Image (cartoon, rainbow, N blue to C red; front, side, top):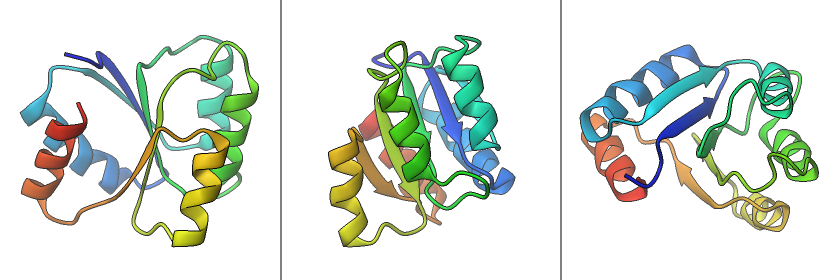
Length: 124
């Protein structure tokens, strides 16, 4: 198993629950969801959590995914954690911005459970 600890940063609790249900069917990786991006950054920077992989939503209140990715990549202790942008839509012009900021990959959130399971199986 390539990734043992996964962090999902997403303000939508239903999306996180859907993600976790699919993850449990394809992996034994540990999982933590944080719904507030500012809290996620604080916990990451403070080494309270140490994921092997981060799934990051774009559209969140207080701090959006692009701002959070920028902050993660500025911090020496967490900048090497791969971040996958995982959002309901990723406009083409935004994809290149995320790549320039150091995103590992990006995926559109599927609505179909089987599609999500297959996506996670391929990624993990």
